[in-house]
Image 1 (tube, rainbow, N blue to C red):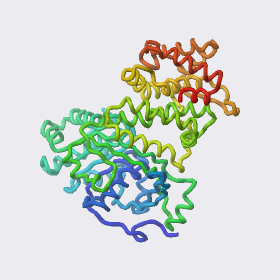
Image 2: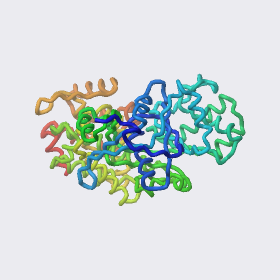
Image 3: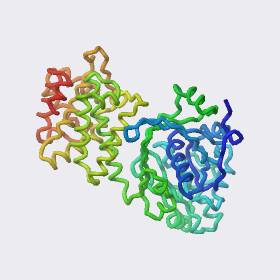
Image 4: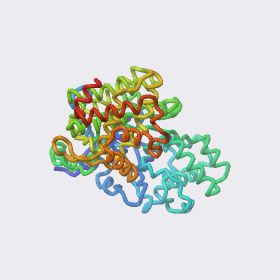
Length: 479
C-alpha cells in the first residue's frame, strides 16, 4: 500500500485564491469538495491555503500527505445507494499561524487572493478585547482576519480591486452579520482609521451563509477496507452524506465569481438567508424533535427504522408534509423537494442515528423548532396540528422516565430545573396537572401555552391515550 502524497498521486497546481480558516472534517468534506467540483467542471481554477485557527490542530497531518485526502460520500441518491470515494486535491498547503506567522501574513500580499472561507465553530466568531494588532497572531478568528485585511489594505495602498469576499460557515444564524460587526469592533479597538474602514466597507464583502451536510468524519470502523480499496494509506479520509446545500446571502455578481451552480452544485445565492434557515429548522430539525420520542416509546431506536415503520413512518410523513410544510412561505414545489431530500437523509442506510441522541434538551428544541409551526398552523387552518401536539405529549411522557415495554430504560436529559419540574408534575399522578404545569412553564416557553385555544385539552387527551393504550395505538388514532 502506497503513502498518499504528490509523488504517488496526481496533484494539480492551481493559483492560490482562497484562504480557509479551519482544517476540520466539515470544511474538507463540504467546502473543499465543492471547490474540487468547481475546478473539475468550470474554469474556476483555484486552490486553497488552509490556516489553522487555533494553536493545536491538524495542519501537520495534512502537510504530511501534501494536503491530499479522500471524501467518502454515502447514502441514497434518488433511491439509489451510493458509496463513492473521491480524491480531493484543492488544498495547496496548510499553515499554523502560531508557528508560521510571517507566512500567514504574507497571504495578504498575494494579489490573486480573492476569497476567505471559515468554520471556526460557533464560539469562533467572538470579540476578544485582549487581542492586539501586533499579536503574532491575534487569538480570535475575527482578530486574525482583521490583521490580514489591514495588511492587505496597506500592501496595495487601499486599492479597491484587492478586496476580499468572505463566506463564514459557522453554524450561527446570520453568521456574516456577526463576523462583520466583530471586525468593526477590532477596527475601533486598534484605531485602524476611517480610510481602512471605508476600504473594508466598499472593497470587501462579508456574506451570511447557511450550510447543510451531515459529516460523520473519519470512518474508524471502515478505514481498513477503504485503504484496501484505494491502495493508499490515507489517514485523512472523511465520510459525509450525499446531500449538500450552501445558501449564500449575496448579490448575483458574487455568484458569477463563484460559479458553483455551473458545476451542478446545490449552492444558492439569495437576497435573504432567513427563509432557508426557517425551512431547515422547520422541515429537518422539527420532525427530528417529535419523531424521536414517538419512535422510542414505540420500541424503535434508530431514525431510519422509524421512517421505515408502517405506523411511525406515516406519522413522520404527516408531520412533515401535512403540518409543518403548511406553515412555510417558500414555493410549494421547492418545499416538497427539500422534504423529500430530508426523508432520504433520514433513511441513509450507512448511518445508524440513535433517536435517544436527538432527545437531549427536547423541550428547548420543541420551543424553537416546532412551537412556531404549531401556532402558524392553528392561525391558518383554525385547528391544532394533531401530529405536533402528539409530539409534545410524547416528549412529556418520555420525561416521566421509567422503562419501555421491552425493559429498555427511558433516561431523559435536560436542564435540572426542567427535570425537577417534570418529576414533581408526574408525581401528582394527574395528567391534567401534568399538561397544565408543563404548558405553564414560562421558563421553557417564554409564555403560558395554556392560553393557546384547545392545547391543554389536546395534550391531556394524548397523555391519557399513551398511558392507557400505548404509543403505537395513540399514533394510529391520529392518522
